[in-house]
Image (tube, rainbow, N blue to C red; front, side):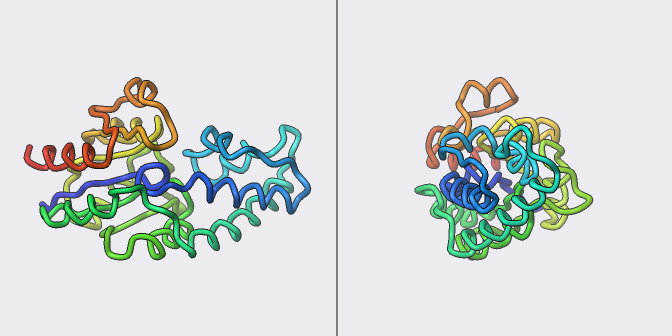
Length: 217
């Protein structure tokens, strides 16, 4: 079977915190609601768009407000994605090197599929062989079903699953995948270790070497 390295997207391959913060604050502002500092969004993201919006809303917000802010956020953030999201330094080179070693690359995100597609088209080109976001009928991570669907589509086996949050570590463990946590994203190393990381990468170069070593097993 083909070898596949699977990655989370936000905080792992792309530095999306600023874009998410700008888009969500803009959506809150349209509804006259209080905004948040960028760093606060680290605690809001990772479990999909619905959880992000509810966490950003005031405690007394109702369903109607939630739906309005969600619609505005989706529109604004898709525009942000269409203009490109910055890849972390070294990520493009890492993905190219994995391809040179005949390792396919894929991303699985809890952000909606339309947003995921916009990010990949604008920021990755051919660096990723497949990317999948939240889709109807497919449970969010930490359920590993989305990762398994990607592997099935690529007709491959998982060399590694890499992410930056406890959701990702649990996804890897739930799927029985070799799970790598990265420390440049949203969460700290201790949390990644406690929630199931088999290995920790502090740099993209370390991550590349861990994946290449896993592919030899």
